[in-house]
Image 1 (cartoon, rainbow, N blue to C red):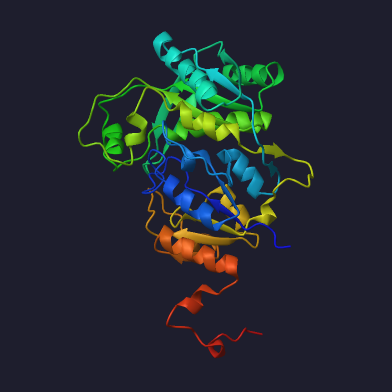
Image 2: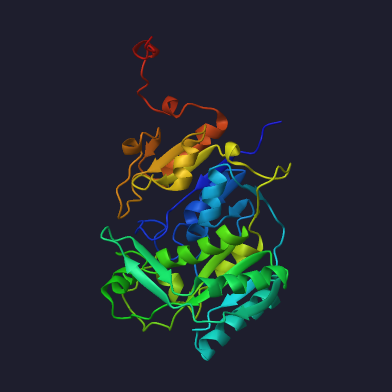
Length: 351
């Protein structure tokens, strides 16, 4: 029996990816690849579209740190039908904005039938700060990580949460140049790097699925808003997509399990051509996984596969990447679809 054809799709967070660097704008790519693959392994930055989301039945929603551990062979992924989601609210969120998020949680229970535990408010404001590197990539810090971990611990061990959704109060800066560029589809998501810090901390500590939704004041209307950024401005919260993703996120296991998926089962990994230096990519490049690098998804960093000695198939677009995946799944050499095929006489292996 042929094992399931498994594809990883990574668009790193906070590096200004032309596709996947905005508000869930890599979702069409994920939906298309999911039609080719039996199993698609990807992460919240690809699937989260604030108020918008899409249920892809064969997609596994894996937080970035968990994805790195999976790719390194340390953790396996156990698909789940349903998770009990615990909700952490930052004490720094204003009462009205906190109520908006609690109403989203109620709506997810009543309208989507999702399974949520009790919620908890951190015992201190998390005090998130945002930073930008010289490259333009974003990152951030939280002043009281212990407060976040205490809240997660209570939800997991006292409320029985299988997954954690975090809502932290992020700084409002509606006039900043970075935000204006992002809203117009030209800049880097200035929240993404700090979001990754929050979710990484919980996944690393407790080995449970986690994703984050920032709490922000609504922005004034902008008639020149980019379609790629628009999903984040449809309402008061980014939480709906996080709850939907976490509801079926795979559990993370260190132990052998006949139902778990492991790194050696990944047939192909699709990444931006200039962003090949991530931990998951480096790990999978040491296996039989085919690395497919997409040129048109340019980013603010320049770490191509050839600079790292990674053997990759470079394609112009995600449409071409999907063609390579179809050939790979069918066992067809993609070069055979071209008018020019190099003779084997020119490919003598050195002795």
